[in-house]
Amino acid sequence: MLSTSARLLQLLTLLQARREWSGQDLAARLGVGERTVRNDVVRLRELGYPIDSAPGRAGGYRLGAGTALPPLLLDDDEACAVAVGLRSSVTGGVGGLEEASVQALTKLDQVLPSRLRHRIGRLAAAMVGVPAPGPSVSVETLTAIAAATHDRERLRFDYTSYQGEVTRRDTEPHRLVHVHRRWYLLGWDVDRADWRTYRVDRMEVRTPNGPRFAHREPPEPDVGGYVERSVREAVWQHHARILLHAPLETLKDRVTSAMGTLEAVDESTCEFRTGADSLPVLATYLGFLEVDFEVLEPPELVAHVAQLGERYRRAAARRPLTA
Image (tube, rainbow, N blue to C red; front, side):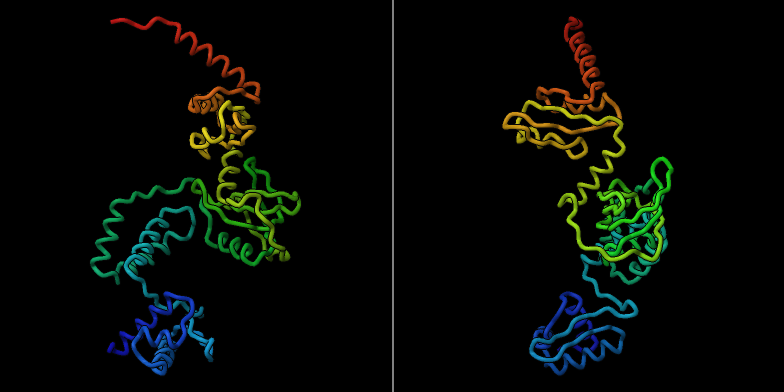
C-alpha cells in the first residue's frame, strides 16, 4: 500500500487529470476505502488545495479555484510543453511577459529531473527565437480585452489608425487573434454597424466597459482566416479580379491564402480575387497558375500584362545563342 504522502500526490494527480470524480472511483483507483479518500481530501484542503465536494450518489470531488495558485503536478510531456512555451514567450510580442517567463522557467528548471532537463535542453538547442518586430502589447491590455470578450461586455477604447488619426470606438469584442506576429481584435463596431479588425497595440482601453451584448455570429466560421485575410488585404496597394479559364477544383490547390481567394463562376471558370504591393507581383501570381485568364480589374494591370506579354514575345522570337 502506498504511504500517505505518496497517496496524497496520486490523489492530487487524479483530481488534476479529470474535472470530477466520484468517491467510489477515487477509492478504486487508489486501492483504499472511501473513508480514506475523504480523510485525504481534508489533508489536501489543509495544504491549500481548493477541493469542492457534493454529497449523495450523484456527488463527487473536483479541484476548484482558490485565492492562491497551489503547486501543480505535471507529467513529462506536460512539463516539456510548459518549458518550451515559456522559452518561446521570452521573445514574443506580449510586453511584460519576458521577465515573468524567465522567472517561471528558472523555477521549473530547478525541480526538473535530469532526464527531462536533458530532453528540454535538446529542444532548446534546436530552437531559434526571432524577436517580434514592432510594438508589443501589454498583458493588462490583452487580459482586459479577453475579460470583456468572455463576459460579452462592450469594449470602449481610443484607436489610432495607420494614418495617425485617433477615434473613439464602441465595440462588441468577439475574438483575439495572433497573426503575423501581432495581436488583433475582431469585433462588431456599434457605430459603424459592421465587423472591424483592430490592431491591439493601437488600442487604448477605457474603463468601465459598456453594457452586455447578445452573441453575434462572426462573419465567417474561420475567424482566424478571416482576420488574417483582412489584415493582408488592408495593406495591399493594388486589388484585382481575374477570370480564370479553369474549374475551381483544378486551381484550389494552387492558390494559397496569401495569394487571394477563388470563387466558382461556372463549371469551367472561376474568379480569382487577389492583391499585392505591386503590379509585377500580381502578374507573377497569374504566371504561376498556368491557365488562360482575363483581367477584369484594375485597368493598370491589363496594361502591365500587355507590356509583359510583348516582352516575352520578343524574348521568344530571338534566336538562341550558339556555342
